[in-house]
Amino acid sequence: MREIKFRAWDKVNKQMCYDLSTLSFSHEGYELTAGYYPEKGDYYELELLQFTGLKDKHGKHIYEGDIVRGLSKVGEVKFLETWSQWWVITNQDDSSFSLVKIPNHPEIYEVIGNIYENPNLLEASK
Image (tube, rainbow, N blue to C red; front, top):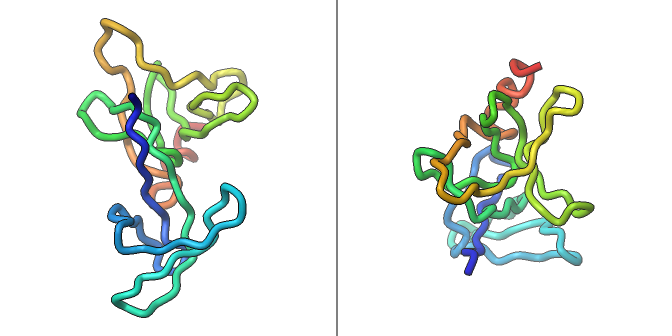
């Protein structure tokens, strides 16, 4: 069974939140719009990012919004509802690829950053 977990990008403080157990959430449909740190009394705008269920070649969890290198290409991890699966979207025409685990094959993906803290990595791949 796939492990379901999340992290969140704090839009106000510009930092990644990995421990969401201290947050309470308000949402509209499936969209997380805000969170609250009860112990601090502060209000934050958060963007929820889901774990893909995959790890990179170093054992690091791959999340939505991560920038990964794989198949000699660099791109952003996104869930495409049309295909109902995770994809790596590149800046190059027709070079995006499905993010899948290949049985009996070493991991081919490497997380090199994320779109919030390292957007320059996507620019460099153009």
